[in-house]
Image (cartoon, rainbow, N blue to C red):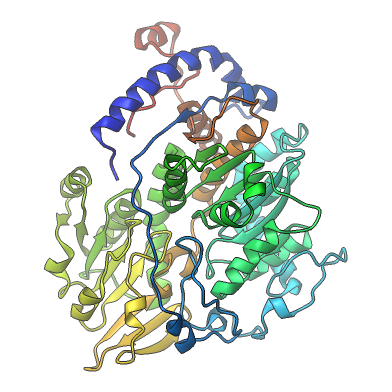
Length: 550
């Protein structure tokens, strides 16, 4: 979503202050250029890093209202689904059998009922099958090859151990790419305990590989809701270990600690959040005066929004749809709900393959961008009976309602590319008159009494990470940003960050980007002294003001 004029003015004022501060720290960053032989001094990194607090409009918190009988009507095979609602809008609302999403070659015994140990004799983990660790290690090694910038950061900084003493509890997608980040944090001195932010995105073999290396991982593909919260609690509530840093994706972990362990939450030194949903929750806490620790908003950093959100989704939307439905896009009519960075990536990819793409938007600026990019901006109700595919990517709730689902054509594919599963009203489809038919993993036919079938993917959850994979290189950019944000918050002197939500400064975004240019053998032009003076810039950056829109 674009920001309001008032926010822009506020950012201009903040940017002016940041420009002055950047002049004082520019020299400290001079060693952090794209040069392959440069070394990072983590002490200088911490002292040079200066983030800008932001205050964005707080959207009304999404609330779930679901009946207990729904859980009774559609029980899981593990029998552990909680009848009580979560403390906040969670990433776990599901009514189908958890076991149905696991590998058919695996037994359906819940990992919670197994006793497993790794080769070192430790049992401080809970994964599907520890014996899959060797396969997971190969996946991680493949990911490392395309995450050279993060590996470079690991090699440069591990001798200084900038995270020594940090006890990081994380809740993210557990994939090979995330494993590279976790092992980087460990190499930099941190102790980590990890769980999954999505019940369908965990790569079981990768979780096993991390557990084999000694990381306390509690996650497996196809968790029930009760399993999800149990895993989070195992990461936080363990004897002799108390977290002092949080890395979150979606806000579930942050809210669990805030609600269940307030004394632990007060001692947290910093929170790093990477999703729209999680950032909204942080701003809600901040506005209510309940955020008692500093937090870093990674989602709105340039290197996250313009690369992970845009380029990652541009490729992974096609992968997810192809793997699940084998659909041919040429000539298909597709509606993309939301034209933020995710929507832009999805729309561009589908258009390139010959699909007729419509866009829905609430924001006139994003709507105008869609028009200028060659898309027709419509209301969903205007095309609901015509389209072949509906993709939501707004971060909102009830974007696709039961009434609209009733009016869709036979065979329409419905999926979500937003973090949370609130965008499609899936709960309304759990009624006696509708029949659910499992086609394949992550693909359901919802059948109406007249025989009409709607194809629902991943039960309305995040399509790309639930049904396919995502480009490793793009995730390297986000992971590097997360690692640097954790280093900064952990090493920042008292008083630098107050109890607020902060954005990464432009200089740090530029540094993350510079680390990844070497992959393309790219060579940036350097300003002359005369040119730098003419533009009023430091030769080493930052090169854009804080309010600049890329």
